[in-house]
Image (cartoon, rainbow, N blue to C red):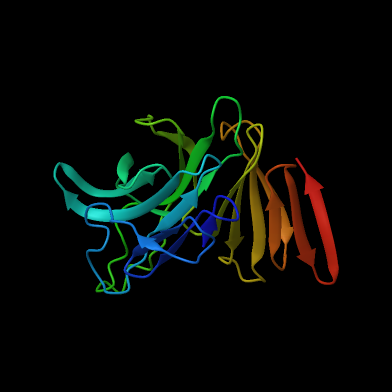
Length: 231
């Protein structure tokens, strides 16, 4: 469930399906899907969805082949005033697992896609554990924006929980390192300059957390103590 305001919002479910309401859920209209979004298993879901601060809905899904596009994740966009999805960006040779938008500014906002580089997991290959190198890609909120993949990548030995996007270039990527002999370590990768450089923060064993993008404040529970830090 993603809402622009108390009246207007979306419901997104298996199939996948997208419904839209303009009367606080009293009635719903199904939205036509973008090309090949529903090809595959009957309970297929989008790889990621995001509702931008300007009310633009974006959906991401992987395709093996669509015209000249091969083995790519497609991101389609739908403005509230429009009835059909249109292509936003193409992310070649990667599987998007999360899609986030930065807070709105006078110049618009940015989109960040968290991806696993390479093809989907081959379930028929027992040697393929599904782990891939992680990467972040970004583009602007305007139509026909150019995609930039941030140069820093993340080791495939890490288990990732996705990113958070704050104001003024603050990016957080959450991960767990369970590759050693001891207890797993929760890590936060922090960038304060739009992903140009990164710092690794060892969080020990956090029990869930929340990030407030408007104040760049991260909250996390450690045993019986709620802690916070601001960036």
